[in-house]
Amino acid sequence: MNVTVDVSAAVHARAGLGRYAATLAAALEHERPGTIRLFANGGVGATPKGGPAEWGMPAKRVNLGYKPWRMAVWLGQLARVGFDSLLGETDLYHATEHLLMPLRNIPTVMTVHDLIFELFPEHHKKLNYGYLHAAMPLFVRRADHIIAVSETTKRDLITRYGTPAEKITVIYEAAAPHFKPQSAAKIAEVRARYLLPERYLITVGTIEPRKNLARLVEGLSILRRDDPALRLVVVGATGWLVESFFAAIERFDQRDAVIMPGFVPDDDLPAMIGGVLGAVTASLYEGFGLPVLEAMACGTPVACSANSSVGEIAGDAAITFDPESVEAMVNALRRLMGDEKLRAELREKGLKRAAEFSWERAARETWMVYDRVLNK
Image 1 (tube, rainbow, N blue to C red):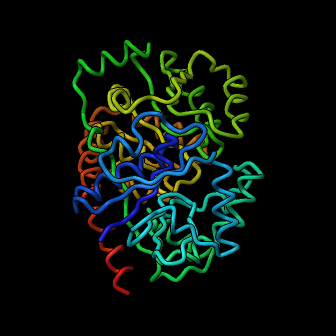
Image 2: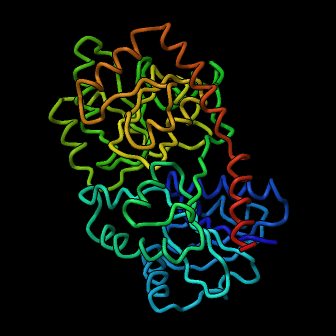
Image 3: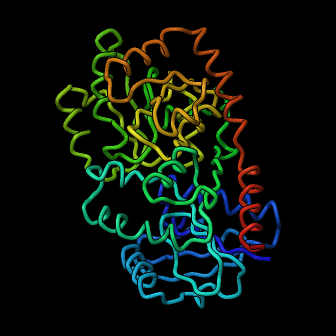
């Protein structure tokens, strides 16, 4: 048996989706060596290094821009045109992002990370929302099986699309192995290189409305009344509809308190997370919330939203709060920063919680899905 895994998101370095595709593909290959093939749409903006050719697995590739490929896939699905020839000989195709290639004779599995575009359409650009709103129900119906990254996403699929529960398997993601407690020397080196302050909170993720950063900035302004040295480091690329975030920085006069290093390489991110007072995920909604686990795996105390999958993943290993309440957020962060005994407890609980999730387990469970689909 061999399986083709779509790693386009990793080739295009698309934040969490890219990390998921690349890490899962490697774990699947480790579980059953010689069985994984890769597929990627390259084209404009593709990562020159770290792509399929360098991962030691056979690979197929097309070279279209991101948007033309999305349209080609959707139109192919509508017309029921098979793209099988693009994959060559393979027994199954796994779409790791929200884009299911139309295939006639090859069974398909698709990972659904979230249906946030359906829940918060105002947080998406109109064209992107229009595409996903039209295409995703079709992709979900056409896939032979769906992997959901959380129980939250599974419930959304059942509620929004009427997807049969038996067609969905929940398989959790995990922090990559390099997310682990860092040495004091590495933390100091990264702090110096990025000109980071001694006292800072960190939040990781693409800057977009759903991340709730405007409220987090307001909370920061309140915390700094008693702790003027406190800073907030926002790690992640600038996404879409970011006006409210930058407006909040101006409105609450936090220009010097919000540090934005942009995208931080994996070699540096664990040390950056490890040097903080606490990690914050204030999202209004997440399909999984990987930054929570990554921070816990680094031994960093976490404060995060109580809702959606964020609370599901955090369990009792983090301080949780209502993300729509600035007061609740501020109170949680005050507790996090002000109680050293609590911080020590959260570090210990967080490390144990993160250890419950692994890519080895995710790979084993994903192979079980493949076997089930192929043995129907």
